[in-house]
Picture 1 (cartoon, rainbow over the protein chains, first blue to last red):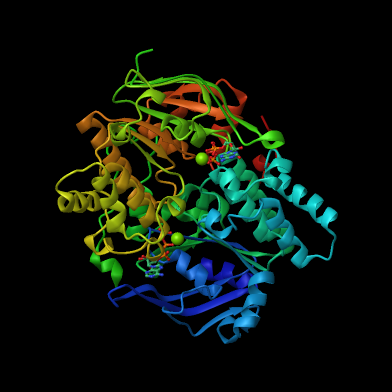
Picture 2 (tube, chains in turn cyan, green):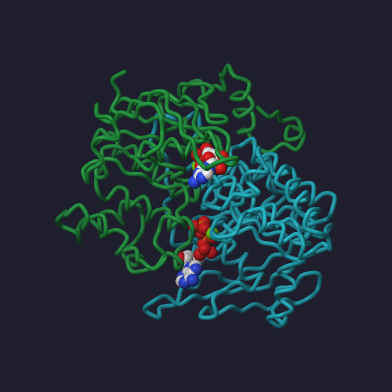
Length: 288
Length: 260
Ligand SMILES: Nc1ncnc2c1ncn2[C@@H]1O[C@H](COP(=O)(O)OP(=O)(O)OP(=O)(O)O)[C@@H](O)[C@H]1O
Ligand SMILES: Nc1ncnc2c1ncn2[C@@H]1O[C@H](COP(=O)(O)OP(=O)(O)OP(=O)(O)O)[C@@H](O)[C@H]1O
Ligand SMILES: [Mg+2]
Ligand SMILES: [Mg+2]
């Protein structure tokens, strides 16, 4: 048994995805096979997914929540959360799972917020859905949550509309909302791409503590390879819809697949600051 | 100061009444023609607001914004916008949901009455690494990174002299990022373009920019050279903390971060 398998076995699998395939149809009726034979399991751990743009990362996340357009075909042997096969749930049951057991922080935060509703009211609504408390108490809770995600002036942001927030503030509001139900599984799709590194670190610490102390499972999708290596436990590397490599996060720099190595070589560093950046030469063999 | 962009004592107030925000406070900097200037700093510190003010989206600022020797408010004709383009931070909000990639790219060409529409669109797509099969897709049929490339293609299709880039690569994977950064560098050298680049990725900023301003709570707290960023050599404590945090996630360090 490989070391990675041994580590995996030590966790109780919270989520089990077996042989997931997703096909979209474009305007011309041509099919786009966005996710191919993807299998993985997740314990109470921080699992990263990296891979180039269009490789299918968000589609994997959205498939778990059944948030795929009906025109697309989704097939899997199973997508099980705590042993419950999500593919067999009715639309109504799935909605309950989405609200309570699984949360997803979407890649486009402002898109996911209601543009004509005040930010504070949106968070309060989410909060009151999960806790029986009155308006005044809910407001205090929301202010506390905003404070937790490092918003400097919670009172103002409470009254603001989404377009009045900076990119990173919108992202933090979204994160706050998704953490309210206390989910078993959090899927975070580029959750901190608009945050400066210090605020990012503080937000990740909140999520980290939920994994460690509350046993939450985390799927973390990001392009930031250095962040993934330092934050996650394990990393899946996707290419053209497939998982081409899996490694311990701390060993990402020693990855073996030429694609992963190629990605790492693209990063700007102190050493290459006066040279052209290396780009990726895609090898058709990676598609097999 | 004799830059192509001169900002002098810029102040921007947003919002009203008790929700008024002093988003930009007494900001001054100058960018020479052909230079690439970096803006970094805390989320919410006013970086995007500075870019929006330069691109003429606010009427109610105080201070001076000079572009190419002219006061910004006086000459916002069609030419002004052709020469100065902005890539917005949020590619989801900035692309029209019911416009195909083709419509998005041809619109600015029509507004500015440019010829060779077909050729320009093909070149623009090729430059950002999107194949022609993306040309008739709608935004919802694109991944996050693909949308951002459309936004970059749209800004570059007019061949502007100044590009304001707000987190242009934060939605891109590192291989596309490398391609886009190489492209931006090539264009800058070839056409002597001037950039202001906002990014949270300090390695990207250090790679692209000679001069970098660090913002916190609406103000520029420190100016750094490329070399200083790469050597983590800063004077202000806020900047020192920012540079340290860019080394990667560390739970213990997260608990000890100070607010400035
Ligand atoms: N609704 C849709 N219709 C058609 N194609 C789609 C649709 N949604 C996604 N795709 C395509 O499926 C592929 C995978 O998309 P996905 O959003 O999962 O990529 P990603 O890995 O998350 O990329 P990024 O890092 O850029 O966000 C892409 O080629 C994308 O264009
Ligand atoms: N239309 C608006 N109305 C009121 N306040 C606004 C508006 N737009 C921005 N603000 C406020 O101005 C401040 C600066 O926002 P800005 O978008 O410039 O920050 P930023 O430095 O770009 O942050 P980020 O890195 O998170 O994108 C924030 O406090 C924000 O809430
Ligand atoms: Mg995505
Ligand atoms: Mg911004």
